[in-house]
Image (spheres, one colour):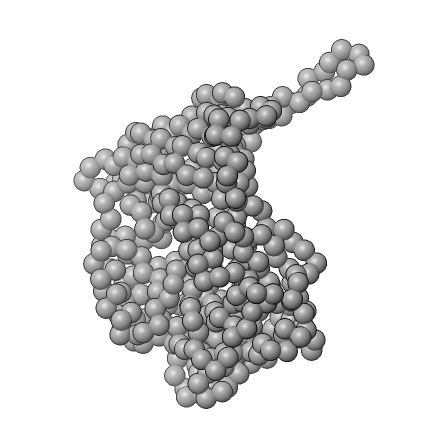
Length: 413
């Protein structure tokens, strides 16, 4: 169900890739020999040592070094580097860019943020325009992080490593950055893992769903959004996986939110924590609200969810029960005629979004989809909007790595 926004919050929000895949050619060999393809080349790589295919790399040893030139006229560059969970990368950058409206050149740390940054949509809205940034994994959902002049971090998952410049496609700079990337073999102690999809998880059955209401509701008991995901893990694990995936904890109090929003704008930070209305499950309001959004469209459009700690466990594990929806605009609340959020009626898309973003962290060990008896497949929200689903509930089991407060990629930003 969608969160209702006060007029001041609405007013606040209103003011608020280049890879040249190198040719892999086959060279004819002498009679009886097999054709051997040449290694892939990346166009802007000026140096390459100890390629990743080097066998039996010792834990922590240097595996490869590559250098790149980032052109100020584009945003993202595919490095051609495929990282594995636990590999450590060290990135250093120098050079300068110039933006037409800036008084001075800027370096890899980017320009100091100013008031205009509140209405810019940048890959990383917490960083200065023109800063060197990076991301690992699926380019559609991977969360950008700041590199600046130097960055050292551990890859949370397997995936492509992309370098970028924190700027919009329509507002690029002139100049270049020289960037050096060193990749080190994973340390044996690194507990990162790739989420494994399994047919079932112990304790996830119809008897469990007999204790979980199929829908959340408002204070008056009107049924609303569908319960569409479960998480197995303690509170620290749950918070770490969301923050690592780039989700922002949402304010619960409207007055506190408006004050924080003013402070955030004064400090030139994007503000995503517009409040969600309180909805109920297990007889109480949500324990946590989490959101993903672009700062300028946060009021009209954001991915958001509510989550409750279940009053029972599954095989001794803490269970979190959640409802996720995607706000796509506004509509009339059929209960009282006020304006409220309109959700994307295909709520399975938001369930898939939760899966992709959380599994991208390397902090999910197993996942499955469970179809309860008499699945909910079509209904109306408490405000009168409609939604549909295949009825399946996503179940994520968090890994031991998520228990560490230093496990998240965001902690190294």
